[in-house]
Length: 83
View 1: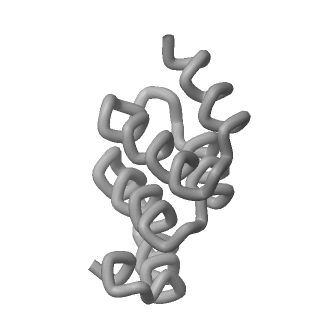
View 2: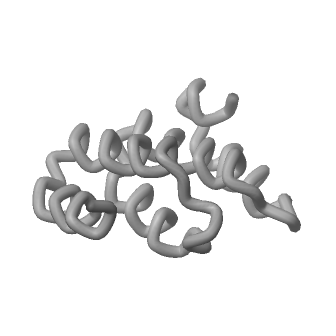
View 3: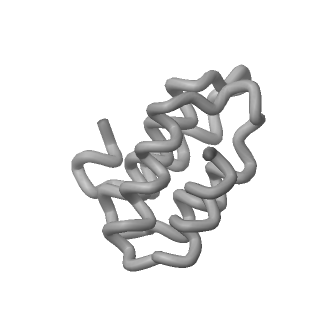
C-alpha cells in the first residue's frame, strides 16, 4: 500500500520488519519499486529473493519494473534466465 502511494521509504521499512517473508511480500516490494521508477532496486531485490519463492507474478513485476526504468539489458538477462 505504501508503495502505491509513492512512499517507498515506508514500504521498505515495513518490508524490513517482516521476519518470515513469503512470495507475496517480495512481489509487493518489487512491484512498489517498479511503480516508483526504481527498476534497479526491483531487479536487485528479485535477485536476492530465494529461488523457491519466485513465481510468474515475481517475473512479471521485475520485468515490468525494468521496462519502465529503461533497463533493457537487465530485463533481457532476467527473461533469458526465466526461459
